Image (cartoon, rainbow over all chains, first blue to last red; front, side, top):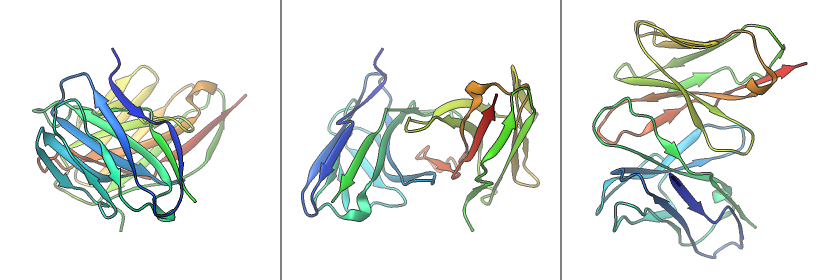
Length: 114
Length: 111
């Protein structure tokens, strides 16, 4: 059982480049999330989705875009990479319904913008 | 004020010690509460949910005080393998089921 899979695991970008961080889950979860974690800090929500075709902004959405065309996939796009976007990015998913369901996280993508 | 606040530590304790972490949250509408564990350069993993009545899982005990908006985690008989960062996490259950994370408390258990 793969759970939540993120690719790539590491990436170095130049300022102004664009890229897409991939996230897929095989648990048929409706809710999916993107977080970023800066050194020594907690995770901050970038975007989330409550189902295919539905996305919404989290706390720190500027500079990012998402799409959710299928239940399984929730890619995160950086259009014009900036040094402030150097961070570790985590994708997570959770089932619908009960509010105390935990989230399942992917391994993370370590992104450096130089 | 941060929505979820934790003492960053680090807490350096010998093996076998008992250690307690505290966490406060600012939003009284918060509905569910968790402790996650995060190893260095790894993803967060659920350690335990926190219930109003308090709950225990082996050497770990979690407590919630809704009136004081305070959450605690007690680890008894610390093991070297308990060394990690412990994240206090709340869910305001606004419909998006998104979690609000504290910055974490680092624990280093020493031989």
